[in-house]
Amino acid sequence: MRFLISETEDTSSWKDKVLDRQIRWDRLDNTGYLFPSIAGENMTSTYRISIILNEEIDKALLQEALDILLPKIDLFNVRLRKGFFWYYFEENGKPAPRVTEETFPCRFIRANRNHSYLFRVTYFGRRINLEVFHALTDGMGGINFIRELAYQYLRLAHPDELKGDGLCADTSLNKEDSFVRNYKAAKPKGFVARKAFLIKGKHLPDGKLGLMHLTMSVQELKKVTHAKEVSINEYMVALTAYSIYKNGFRGRSKDHPIRVAVPVNLRPFYDSYTTKNFFVVVSAEVCDREEEYTFDEILQICKTTLREQITKEHLEDLFSYSVSNQMNPFLKAIPLGIKNIAIKFVYTKSATANTTTVTNVGNIKILDEYRKYIRGFTANIAMSIGQDIKGTILSYGDDFVYTFSTSLEDTSIERTFVKQLASDGIRVSVTTNGVFYG
Image (cartoon, rainbow, N blue to C red; front, side, top):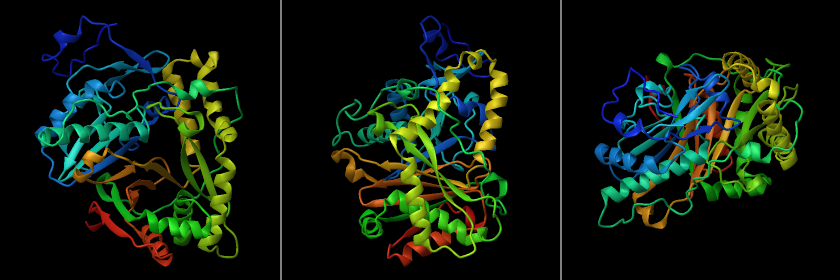
């Protein structure tokens, strides 16, 4: 196999080095197949993970760090190709994408303007941002990459204090499709078709995306959630549902419940270390009723419904349905153009079955020798059909960060969220990316 070179790109600096060697290719994972079919300017299917250092970012050093790291991470060193039946990844081999100063988060990644890569690296002040097209990987793969990028950058910036040039021991390079490996048998339909309550409102101008980072103490959260006998994740999902409920839901949507989609990392259930996508989505649902819900009532509803769904057996049912379609000989033989039409239809139907999404990236850990250089992390996801506000969770040390990403001007939902945290005795620091202020 040889590279197919786009005439729109300047390839003179590298094409002689790669034309005569065999090029690796790889299949997309079972979830990854979805994103190329649905992505575009209005639904970018990207997410961002940011790392905040204790020093200003040097653009030249960050570019050098990326140039050094990229050849070591095969998962990111690919371009997307379009076959007759399926999309596939092909080894890229071009120079790393250019590091730029950040603009608005989670814009569509145009591969032909990005050396054909499916990720971008930007910076602003002390912050390094990694934005990833979801076909490549989920949050685990993104954390792996930005953490190693930060390590390499800091080694270049502080050569007398930080040594070494390899990847750290806990950075996985595993690229198996864990969906297919753990698939058992065909299962019933795995998505909710009933339409959910959708939040309406005036949008931010020019397609801007607003970010609001709420930082609180993990220890304070644990005290509250322990007293309420729920997990932190259950508490945050319920608080999101409650904040939506208190702002325009009651009495207006008898047939369309608030439904919060919650991606679940499958790796702990299957002892997987893959850096490809490996998650499924469950939902917490709150229906309208005559009497007003209290927050604690919604919390118990979300706790019960999530625990009923987050079992290995149920999660396996959910992803086995998708894998059975992927492995169906008849569906395999359908040309990609027809598949794309069907995938868009199914996705649109399932996307409007959820009011919002709350995803938990998890607890981020770094090596001890880098701690004094790193202040913290944030993460956020892009908007999708019917979902104009979403939440992303992560923790680092004692910092717990919940980030609202929204295309809406009104911040009533976010204000209700913060007020309930304060009511429960949790102190919150709020920062934004400034778009709410004009």
